[in-house]
Length: 258
Ligand SMILES: [Zn+2]
Image (cartoon, rainbow, N blue to C red; front, side, top):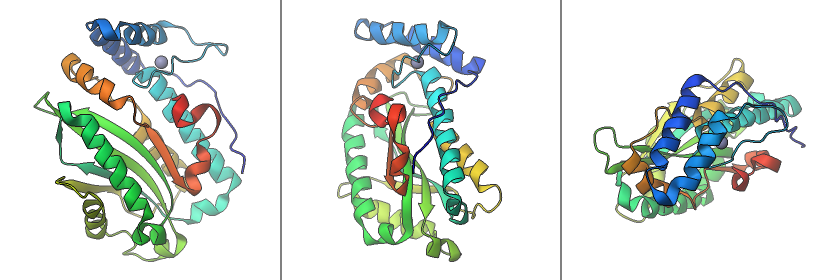
């Protein structure tokens, strides 16, 4: 299947622009991050025309917003080309650890990555999942700036036989599986956001779930937290696709280009 690349620019809302400017301001406080600050600042100020590309900085809210909509459009194209996908059942699930110290973020992300890979190799997963879109999100602790909340927000395409079974997605079983895939002392959690079969307008709903998982958080986090967390996140893929959804990572929107 060829995925049609839709590179049409989307309108950037004011709050996303404001978040980008605020982020640039935060980053400019650290001499080592001034280059990043300038890049994101320029991205927020430029006027879009077809000849201009975004800055592609992994933390740029403007580019994250654009990427979210581009990926949503790719999902839309996939439905247009393979209408059978519409008969399958999709769920939106968050795989997380309870919390971690921001200073230990990279260690925690590594453990999550290994646990997720282990999970996709389990028979339980293979028998139920056809494809997955996985997005890494890391937020600052609500009341404590030393805490990070890393998680994988996933859109799962279940196998048709699982789709027919009303108990096809059981939160307790998935929770056990996710916990079991960590071989260390992590408190792992699974939160299905939407376990109802998406029957009506599946195309629109999955498109919106994808956009929701990818779009930037506003307002941004505190400067200290960000400067501590940012370098630790740089070597991790923000987005990864598995199974039949692997084909979505093509061209300009492959993980390395984001
Ligand atoms: Zn940008």
